[in-house]
Structure formats: C-alpha cells, structure tokens
Image 1 (tube, rainbow, N blue to C red):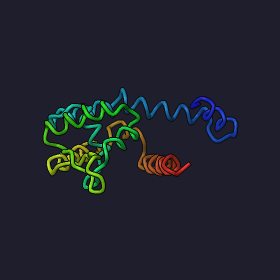
Image 2 (cartoon, rainbow, N blue to C red; image 1 turned 30 degrees about the horizontal axis):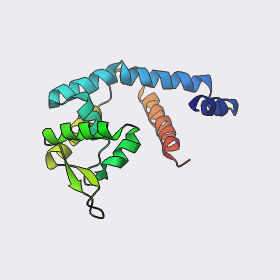
Image 3 (cartoon, one colour; image 1 turned 90 degrees about the vertical axis):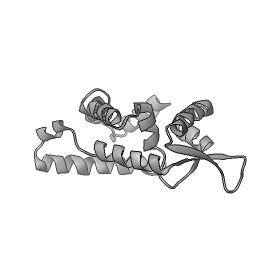
Length: 158
C-alpha cells in the first residue's frame, strides 16, 4: 500500500526523485551519522538505553496515555508496551495508573524523574550536529523553513 501511495503522489508531481534523495539524506543523518551518534552520547550521559529514550519522546508529560493507545500509535503489540513500561517503572521514570473513567484501563504517566530526564534528553538533542556548519546561516534558515513546511504537511489530518 505504501508503494502505491508513494507512486501516486510521485505521478501527480508532488513527490520528485529529489524529495526521495532529501529523505534519504535525513534518514542517513539520523540513523547512521552525527544524529545517531548524538542520540547514543545523550543516552550514555543520562544513563539510559536508546529504547528507553525513544519511549520518552512519545510520552507527553502530564498527559497519561492508555497503554492500548500507545500500542496503536507505536504500531506494536501490547505485550511490547508492557515490557517498555516495566522498564520505565523499574527506572522510576513512569508509572501505571488507573484511567479516571474506567479503572480497567491502565494509563502510563511520566513521574517527576521521567519528566526531568525527558527534558534533559530533549535539550541534549536540540543542539544541531556540527555537520550543519557546512551550510551558511541563510541556508540553515531555508532548511529550517522547508522542514517546518514538510513537518506541518506530515501532521495534517488525511
């Protein structure tokens, strides 16, 4: 299905080969370049695994989420969410709570320690990698604006 959606968008002239190349470059930066190294260094300095850090990205402070909703959003099995939440609880970063409207539903909420660690992680990852220095200040602003536009389009309801 993804292939047909992508092909349809490309045929309509909205997604060009250049867009695919840009996407590949962003992916390379995050999964194998300075972005990947930065994530690993941040996790090491904070004493958490990458999987714990990634889960903290998706749990919003002061917004407990049902575990079922997390499983749907992360597109994974509920047992995987259980294992992640077990790890977060063991580290004192999150806790299970009963849903206020239905005590049978378990929600996940960050603890004060989890909120603090999440903020520290986000701060460490907010520093642009040195590779961005290859761009002029004008190019950096252009890149920021273009990525903001793509991000806004990616989060619009379909």
